[in-house]
Image (cartoon, rainbow, N blue to C red; front, side, top):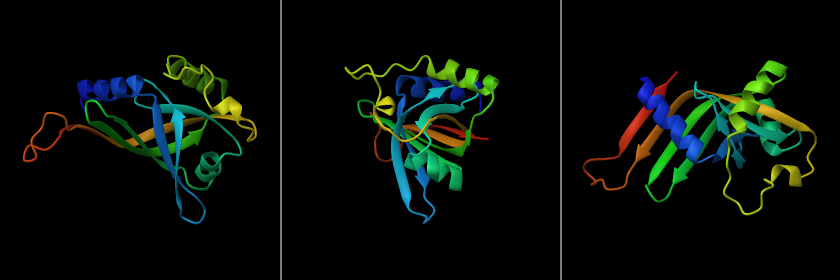
Length: 153
């Protein structure tokens, strides 16, 4: 993927930090959870969760995840697949906090949902993407299809 395409995907995520992370449980049942993510210059996504949440338990069983986010006004969607890994070193946490530090949620309640649930201790995850597709459908005719930007690792 060229640098311009990667920057377009990164910019979209920065403007839309509330995403749905899809996981699969031990019984191969799908699960989706809304989380705030930060993104770095390499298109790695970072999010916080707690150790006893379904998504954290599922990632331990199967680290392959999906990410979906949309912008209704422009009819733009991002679909991303990758591998989630739990971060453990101070250097990794510093990278994640740098990416998460610029997340600006739009809720009138300044405290995001995570601190409001009791589900174990905090964990930081990184999603390393294997592929991503950003498509815009607004102002397009059926025969034209969407305007898309794709990434393959």
